[in-house]
Length: 280
Image 1 (cartoon, rainbow, N blue to C red):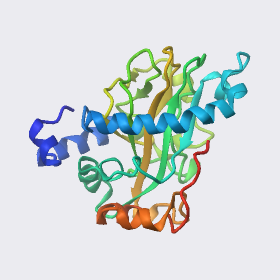
Image 2: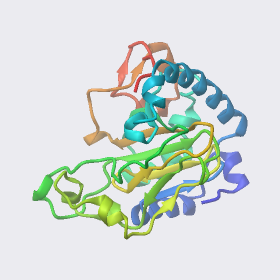
Image 3: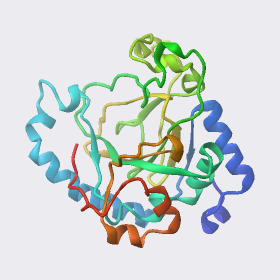
């Protein structure tokens, strides 16, 4: 979806666009708002992320650049958890009003943020990831019905994502609507089915926002460029069934500076702990 200049300036989607976005997620598995975040803000976040990523890759150089294997079974795809610090914790990242309005509609008004990381496709990957969903079955083989949305993933690309630099490949239009048992370890091979199904490369400009049902099938693809392709990745869930043990370490002073909405989103996390060093 392209949002209007007035919506960007006001930081508010029109009610009909909130409803349209919610319906697209319900029936298609995802929605993308293009060019939402200001270019200078995304460039600043990208610069800081590269300051974190480059020494990490140097430390794991043998694993990353091993020609006989490659990082993560030849995909050169890495998940890196982010420290809870500026510039990553800007309200426009963790509590963007376009996102919160849509999630209010889909998850109810009391939802939380419980995952804060990045997904980066590194140059030199030989393989795509296996086709997968980001969730498992809640009730296993006992449940043959579709369940309500339990997690929504928000991805924000920090660079322009195109066909060459490892875009996410997605299988929209129904893979998130299968019975719960289809997400168990015993379900039929998603990879075999995906070969015969329609897929889309999630090509989008830097600073766009993708919201997706975590059940939608997808995979990372090889990065044929010479630069990393990073996404910020966050997961939101209704407070009633979200993890309560907390995985995001948040210094008290950082938490206190957040907006009221952001503090509510993060209230189950490890408040009062030092920000973590980035880790895989």
